[in-house]
Amino acid sequence: MNFNLTALVPELFFLGLVLVLMVQSLGTREWKPAVEKWLPFGACAAFFVSITGFGLHGTMFWDVYKVDMMSQFFKIAIAFGFYVTVLNASKQSTLEEGKRADYYMLLGFSTLGLMMLASSVELITIYLALELASYAMYAVIPLRAKSKGAAEAGIKYILFGAVATALALYGLSYIMATMHTTYISELMTKSWAFADNPMAVVGLSLFLAGMFFKLALFPFHFWCPDVYQGASNETAAFVATMPKMGAIVVLVRIAVLLKPGLEITTLLAVLGACSMTFGNLSALAQTDIKRLLGFSSVAHAGYIMVGLVSGTYEGVAAAAFYALAYLVMNLLVFWVVSRVASDGRNLKLTDLNGLYKKAPVLAFSLAAGAFALVGLPPTMGFMGKFFLITSAWGHGYNWLVIVLVLNSAIAIYYYLSLFRHAFTEEKAPGKVADPDTSWFASAGAAMLAASVLAIGMIPAPMFNFAINAGKSLYGIAVAVSGGGH
Image (cartoon, rainbow, N blue to C red; front, side, top):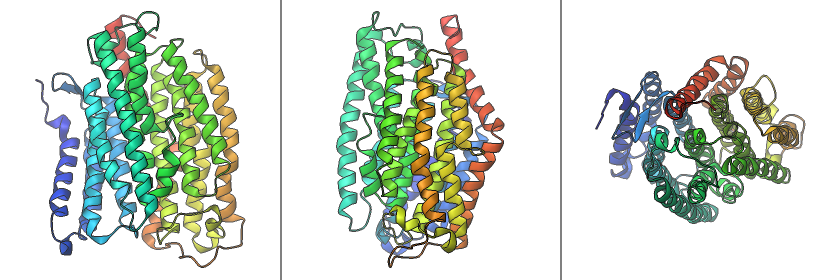
């Protein structure tokens, strides 16, 4: 068994962080609230520790765990997302005081599972890491004081998650029975045409269904808007971003098995087109902001498929870059939502009326987030869609690129509704809590907005990182199969 302690430093640091949170959650109520005095610094340190892992590589634990460029790309993104969600949740008003340490402990366990998922290159290991990330989420979603909607959201997430997990496990048994291996590196050498291995193709489709559930891809999206609406704003920010990073890194690794024209690749393309269209059309009718963002995430799951079906390293690199863009854009919008709803209520579009007068920094940041989600320049959302389109064009799924462009036009309406209400509507809602305009709220929103704009204007460093990560995956594929895609 190979073992490189240095390559595991990010995971070990997160494990230590979670164990400290576990000890603190067992303490008395008097010292539990102190968690928010040190955890943001711990989460920030975890982010920088993840960055120090850049350039490390190697396989461990009988080759089921691999540290490479792709795993490091996603670990850095996941650590950044955890840091922002911890900062965001530190001002959560709907969380009971005695449960704060437990809440952060669950978020930490879920993040640790996602970090492990990024390096898993064997299907059983992927399944176990996914379960570690999921179980904590089942417990954290209902933690919204005196809210029946949160309890309902938690139950829905558990029930639907159990079905998706069962499908994935059932599909895994089909793959094992047919291919006699669960290592992705060995599965690359097998044929994934339905005519050659129908049982394996069915099994892989079922296994991917578990990832589609986390990604909220049509038709596995049905939990998404209800859970976003029922969970607290800060919890919804985590659920909307972090689990999707884990699902995307698994799909990126499995995408090296697929070539344009295969039945399962075409299935991904069709589901992607359906997801984009259904998500955007459903979002048009929403007035609750979190439900709108829920259907928006269904559409973005479809966009990710455009890169995955191309069968090239540019495609998986574009999917990885867009995953990072999705993370930052949504963290920005949810940060503003959480600060505007300073009392923890669910926001309607009309709650944004006149925001530019009450909180100009939050209003500008919301506009940056909305423009990025639409895909307007000079934001990272625009560059993400540009990379997806250019990577997929000419590889057999040009129709899917056209669907993406048309859906981006549809999405303009509801994303710019956020801007319209914040900047052009003057009629303020009734007696509600004022937005949080503290330096903390403004600084966090401004930094995230600056990230969205800066990476959009200078995308080369991040995209080159993603390109090198994609090349590393397809370099393995070429070495094993003796040819390129």
